[in-house]
Amino acid sequence: MEPQPAVQTLNLTRLYGDMVALNNLSLTVHKADLFGFIGSNGAGKTTTLRILATFLAPSGGTAQIMGHDVVRDADAVRHIIGYMPDFFGVYKDMEVTEYLDFFGACYKIPSAQRDKVVQDVLELVGLTDKKGALIGALSRGMQQRLGLARVLIHDPAVLLLDEPASGLDPRARIEVMAILQELQRLGKTIIISSHILSELETLCNRVAIIEKGQLIYTGPVQGVRDQMASGRVVWVRVSSDLDHAIALLKQHTEVSAVDATDGRLKVTLVNHDTDHSLVADVLVKGGARLVELREDELGLEEVFLRVTKGETQ
Image 1: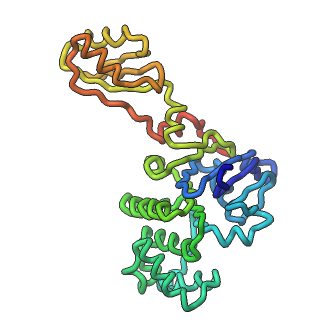
Image 2: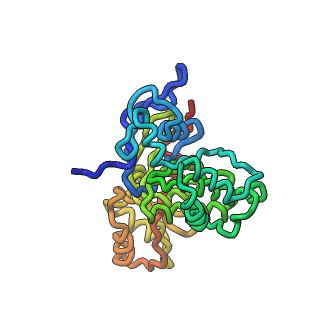
Image 3: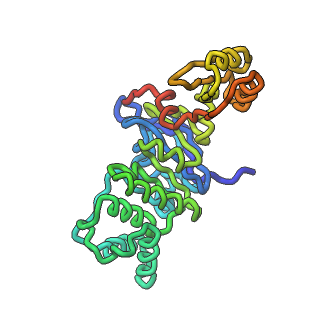
């Protein structure tokens, strides 16, 4: 018997008049996943997260979080999720601890425990030294971390984060991503929508790609690379005759193409599963002097461009 997923949607649909924002979206997110939700603006990411956060009713289909239906069991869902929208308001004239204490009270955390809870979440997001600061005096990156602290105040099992690194400078983005990795290590299930694909590539263990409200791919990050790569690409540099090396490689049945670029050879293999060591074997056995061999990794950004058409509602 498979364990219950943390988040599951089945044929989730949302209409705005005649416009279909979500079209039969079926997703499964496992417990402790750091799940990347990828799509262009208008693809349906925010609509999906708002439905999961119980702020928006679906037009059709169902969604469950930890076994609770987001429509029928909305109150139960709200106690086990932390939702951070892409734009969230902060009370700039409040102190950091005052702000978090207020939300702790909203979640009915007893006053005797709230101080400890506030200190713990501030430590987790790296804002302990700012606990007495006015929120309006914090940088955008620190305000984003404070937003994370706010959604953690009631210790939710599932985090729904809509573009949490939006508008941050590179250092602040790295800090936020490091916090998310620590939260995953602590057992949190995290769904993060983002356009910063290069960071999702190293951050997430699984991803979903949607366009115009429809699911294009869901699964491991490596799986989408393998699915899109028609053949493995290897870059080769030799110190011997380049034409001789090209001739050797073109004779092999597992090689589909060889192109010379700036003194290097771009070797495309027939299948993605083909072991690229055969390139070295062919060259060395044929008398070529191999000085460099490097596999070309297909990045998530390149995959996204290949599988989507750039269409929006």
